[in-house]
Image (cartoon, rainbow, N blue to C red; front, side, top):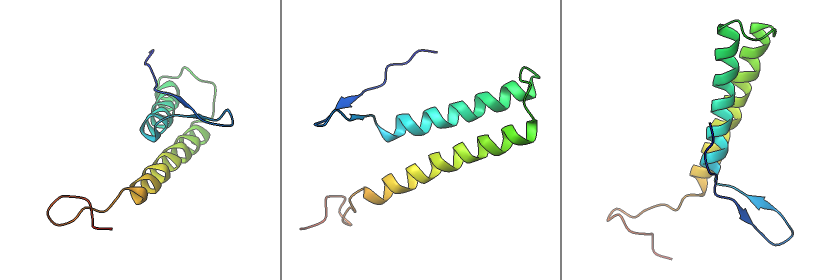
Length: 83
């Protein structure tokens, strides 16, 4: 599957991509590992694959949580909070 990913170059040569793209990639990778193991297409220990897939999902969840924490709080009227 090919899908365009919006990337941004910043000063210093760092490359940024949206967190939602990163978390989606991590979750798809974990799901692919589990599907390959379930289908018998991988010579890996199923327990190890489950542990690794779980770890990737936890990293994706943590990224989501940290991004949500950066979101601005909205006022009761739905606008941005006063500064």
